[in-house]
Image (cartoon, rainbow, N blue to C red; front, top):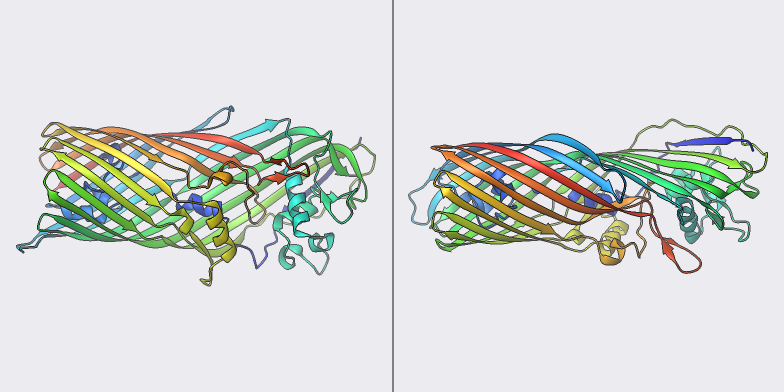
Length: 531
């Protein structure tokens, strides 16, 4: 048995590509519990509390609570651990500058307007760093079968997928990129029993294993300006403008190794024989974006013991730029003695695409009870309309196909947060909190029952099912100085899909899914001064 090797490095880029996939935009639209230590230690349940630098990024109405100026900085140390199913976990430790802010307060003599305040803040909204890997033995499905099914469903032929001296299917054909790549890579070959269609490499009698690796990096930072005031010590209002900076990098690998695979006997794929097959796909993505948003909020204090808070966040309107590259490698070992000639190669270059996205809008409501001068108990509810996300071309026209995908896949997510603070002494306080967020993905897509559409040459996608936080901390005040510390435990349950659902002729559906658990533990310190 001779070894046959052929490697393809994909570098072509069509002009009529869809913008970023819906699940990637979902990933970039999500936020974490981050801010000052006091804010985090109370689980982020601050919509009706106010009087903290973090309110500039949550409920700008909280700036009206201030009677004095305030400046603070928050640093944190994150300990991340991710584990896919029953495989070994991967860990990393990161230092983050979570928050810097300043609030200026002007006391007024008006009967109605008691204070007019303004503030500037920097806040890390999300940290993308996560790494995990896994695999399956005895696989019953294959990425090659998925590509064959996708290609057959579209009615694409070899003429649509095959490159010639004057025809490049990545540029000229309407066929999916992954179909062209699958054809070029011999992942899909002419079906010997159904002429005019394609078949994958896994069939009756085939076996093997699959493996994957995901390495995410990057962050979302927000720089905000907030204005607000105090009306009659009853109504506290605020409005804010946020400028966001997004930096996201993703390395995605998926590979399979099969025995008794249905492989071509030669480069013309005129005959399909049994043999071994090893192949893999690497996608690299480097995304940067800049965007802006607006926030409105109020806190109402009908009596000293009760506060009601409401806030509304517009979408963040991003201008995006993707750099991406794909590498496909494969090795076939047919049982016959035929041999492949050297395959064509082209450079593994980075290609660029520009587009726009609108993140979801958010609504927040909260209620807080103040017990004398010793305690605060607060409860928050947040509604995030993930089905309102939008993807647009660089010229501003909406990508209707992606909008339809977003409406099909996503639903609103709900988050409930509770927090409490108790002053042991006038200078020392203890705090605790809890927060829980539901999945933004509809049930049938969450469970892999229905197939999703992916774009480019990357058929994998991932999403969070639930996220919860358990928090605690303390604060100490000495004259105008204060020090707060917080401990935050984030438990995040996610799902990784190597490729969308494969529909087999016998009516069964199958895809390669893995549960991923990410635990993030953070210790943060805030130093501040009020004057």
